[in-house]
Image (tube, rainbow, N blue to C red; front, side):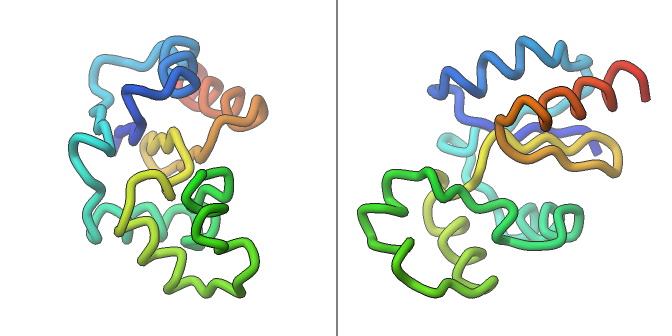
Length: 118
């Protein structure tokens, strides 16, 4: 599978997408316009190993809801991601059997290497 979950209104996502020079067979899913499904999240979970890895602790709602002061479980992370798109760390690129989560320079470099050298 080759797919990227992103927000088209997020300038960081757009910059990363341009930098990665994704091949034409990569499927784009704007998670605000087309909400992530439980099945899709399950696939991402299998690749990442945890829901927490997919969860954005930078989301404004995370702070607004006081979640940083709570002891969240894997089930909580899963439910919050399904409840509101802002809780998915982004972008999330699935390229063949690899997953790249978030916007760190290290993640971006690893994704670029997998796409253009793999």
